[in-house]
Image (tube, rainbow over all chains, first blue to last red; front, side, top):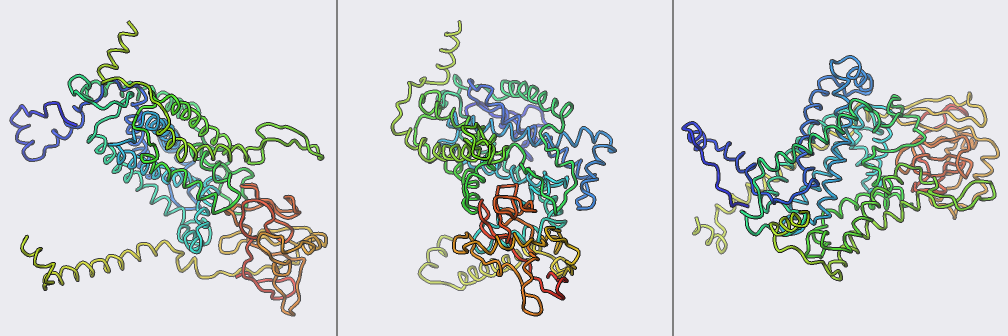
Length: 427
Length: 183
């Protein structure tokens, strides 16, 4: 999207450099970029994610200087970082809780995209690149969690790699290939370290594609109405949104710092402070909180292959979301029914996370007591099943049908009109 | 250039042949080079060198279970009680998810006789690899996997829960009545 005058090199050196390597022009075009003037704070999570990604890469490179990827030394080397390395007590929790912060921000970013229809034409590729980034984040986060080689690391790795054994015919060969042996062991740890190191750079590359794909159509906005007049509807990204994003980043960093400095282990699991033991499985295996909804879906299905398909399908469905939502109206602000179903969808995702954290046989509420005096009632297994059904129904039934039957409310003529109207209302 | 393209459609020239042959050779070469990059992740020679574990079971008391390690994997060795054996043999095999008789879960000794008191199985749940809790756990007096709730009976057969198969049996043979070699 263009409309502003481009970079105009003033000094002789700038002109000389611009003719040889137009890097200043690239930066100018990236930051002096027409941006809808009505973006709200839900739009700041992209910039927040960029900051956390850089934080993860920098702290990760530092941790790799001190970490030892070997089954006999990995656990101790993480303790060594936390206790002996200068500022290791800060850098290791920054990296570990940084992963949680990144998932927190990415989930808000994705819900934002769904609510405001940011995946709709002409932003389908932008959305798909984002889903690929999310997939890589999940793989990277999982492999990173294995590296400290505690009990949850080991058994998490065992459970997740065993998911691939559900593949018909080649499942066993694939798991053995992933492990480099006959169980999760040293070869597994070393390759996970290697991949955990390199995948963030793949993510960085995809983030560049994501921003590039954003800069072709420009930002969506809370009204979903396209920019019609660049002068009236937009503001240059810098300084308007660098400042707004900057403020949001500072607030987010306060939350991040609270975890790093005051509760560095709050988001982890105590069992990961027990060394990996291949012959004893912890009584209750749970993944990190950001995988819990998918874990609940895996357990909701009483069949191994079925469970794996349902779990991966929950992410796969996001790839085709732009074509499942049949409504021409982007923003759910003007879609009363879609707004309601979206709200339920968010609650369902949180509910799935809750179910994933509990044992499937635990009860949500008890209704009776059986002959042995054991309470019976509505179990988390059934909660997970119902919520999984809604998760799929939202994408495969509700969004396709709503676009055809829902009568959207009137949308503003332009971004400028919507801004002026809301200002007049407040005055 | 345009001329070359237009004529090549009707008249495959030497240039087209070289073009396609080069592309084909390049594709085959890339494929050949990719294979070592993929195959290096498979178990290495030292991992694969089938290590065998010899184990004397005479010290295992009736009703006791030990976990041995073979190829890095845990192995259950349970000295079953008569009650457990009777329970395992009383089951109608046809009703099982992965039908196997109790004797199919065992290996005969050198005299061709079974030692039904010794049950030897890989200790990883066939669902997602956790180590089930033993000593009569679960609804079928066998093993119960805490991860996703699979119940195995006293012959290690799957009875309830998401696991698709009975607990796997490692390859092993009896050297004497109580000494076995796994692998």
